[in-house]
Length: 148
Image (cartoon, rainbow, N blue to C red; front, side, top):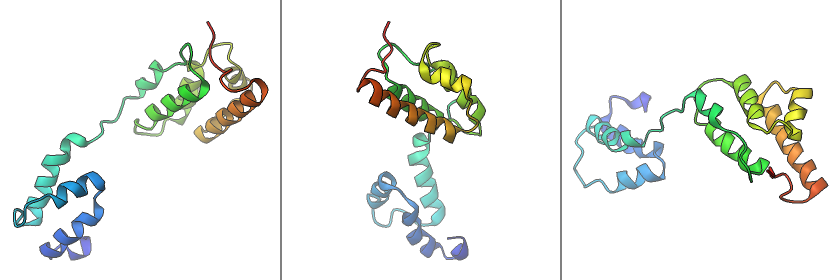
């Protein structure tokens, strides 16, 4: 689009190619001849979708997560990574430590992470997956729940 920034008609025609399904539905439902310029198009788009922007979560959000009674490692890690992905920035070390601290003190994975620390989020994810597989093979499905 930058190459054709002087040709407003072309820019307006190319604009939809950058939209996802929800925005595309909005675009398709615009009334014919209701937009007269690219500026009007971007203003209409901005006013419609400004409320759909995701607000980045603060890093402290990770500190509130911990494995709860009845949680499996899968439910805890799924919840953790969902929250982690909503935080902007490079916080691998914090992510590794907060995940580990969210596990119960006597949990095997926590002990493993203390004895043999990981240095990247990828290594942490791999260790979690390995632990889940070993746990599933050793004890059967559902046995990695926290029991009061």
